[in-house]
Image 1: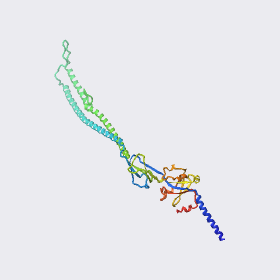
Image 2: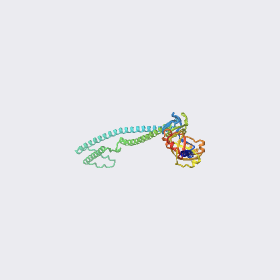
Image 3: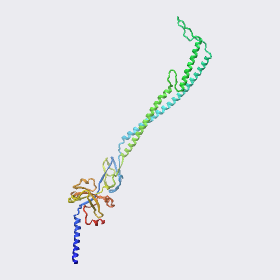
Image 4: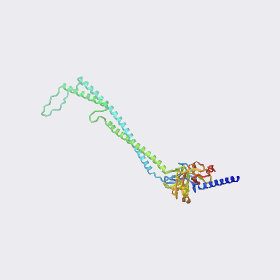
Length: 391
């Protein structure tokens, strides 16, 4: 009886071993698998002499970190020079209009002083003449007339002379004439005190006042031209500042890392003269890590995008859950043009599969470990429980 149980136990162990062996062998798996990532080509934005920072291959770079500088000693500054000239012209115009405005204002001040003097003296003259006219009127009204004289023209030959006015009528004429003169002088005085000067042969203002009116128009025009020149200077200054910044940026430009990754390849050496758009380095984009693998045709035809898989790195370590993201088929060489690790000839003879394995970025050892190999399994295997222990 014991022999029977021993035989039965042995057969069970043999069957289990056969199941493990067959299960391990017939599980859909890749022939090879490689951790891969996208390469980013860094190009120079201007032409000039390249100076790269002293960093070894594989050095880590943060996004925006300086890789090097490009200096152009022959940067085009023609537009900047033109703006400097235009700014100088604007400043010269400001100086000219300022000088004309100030000189015109000084002339106006002198003319205003002359006009004020004329007004004061003219009013004093009118008052003086009015006082004498009033005295004469008082004398005439008191009967103090000058001796009678002949005011009529002499008679021509053969013509009778008209009768002379009597003495009383002549006195009335004298009094009336003086009163008229007083009324005219009072009107002129009142007008002069209001700023308008009446008289024969000139306008309501003296020549100095008329000249002030003309110069005030010129002063307003010069002030407007000065404001225009100052606005033009401000515009030129702002454009010149912008052009200087542009020229400085064009003269010396920092080449910065567009991604967070590692230096994969240096394409130009320091001191080399490069042209705008020339590639100077290639960086490994560590955020784009994927796993590329090749499988047989039978396994390939059983796969679908979105299918789960397991990546096991070579040399031991934990398994990483992944997802099929691309089925490229056989001879898929073109899809590797922007990836770090190119496929081998044997890889291209099989069928290409790409997987997303998010757990790689969380692992300290395999984070951005581009080039590390392993295998991908698309079915569960009997010994996966043992592998998940982390052996």
